[in-house]
Length: 105
Ligand SMILES: N[C@@H](CCC(=O)N[C@@H](CS)C(=O)NCC(=O)O)C(=O)O
Image 1 (spheres, rainbow, N blue to C red):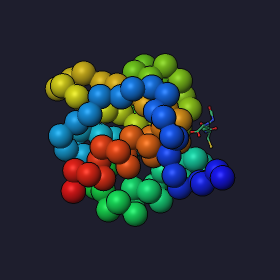
Image 2: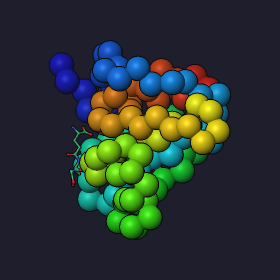
Image 3: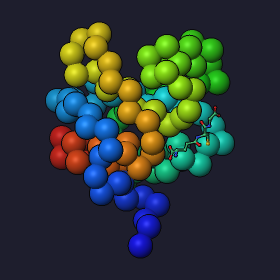
Image 4: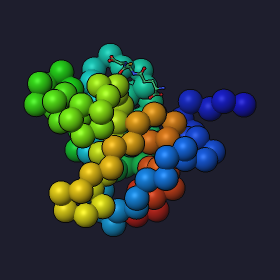
């Protein structure tokens, strides 16, 4: 059965692991249910992940330039300094956080 707070069984896009949540940023905006879905899991896992609100032009511009789409939520992963991987889709973001960031704590 579909569970809103469980991630995808398989990550569709294999995203690089990072050693600290400092290397993660969630691009999101208010009134977005898919963003709320991810934020509920971030709260559950008690992760301190920076949030970038795409209602602010600088964050929207960074998302579109880096990720290629304006859709939120999107998790920006920085495996190496200045090198970014942009993970879209709330189910994939949740799967990534549960598999990689949750175990980090
Ligand atoms: N399947 C996506 C859907 C995400 C989605 O539809 N997000 C909306 C906001 S709630 C969005 O960004 N739409 C494109 C846009 O507004 O430009 C997910 O689960 O993350």
